[in-house]
Length: 134
Image: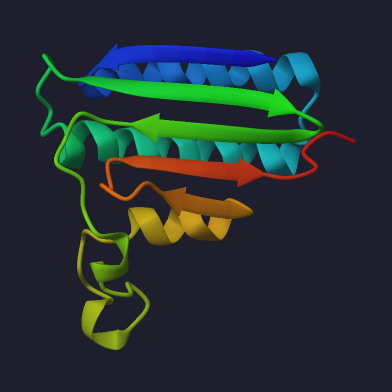
């Protein structure tokens, strides 16, 4: 099962992505524990694409691909921004960063997904969730 959506960079459009994830995870019977991980990581990635990548410019789109194959779900989120270097994000668990309000999204996504990869430009992330169906 595959679904691709392109949304304007508006926070309200997170609901569209949420509905698409609900539809696919419900149709294939994703385990409840995995459903939460998938939903939180995907919404974090799309939120980052909207706010950081596209700077909330509604003229710029966020492309979201959700693919279920062989009991795995892969989600790719791509924005039209300049990209960033994920390895330059400070570790939010270090004492000097603990009170920072930003910089937690990529950390959270990497903890929830079984694998996470960024493209070279840094404007696209692919997250994989393995064995999500009983």
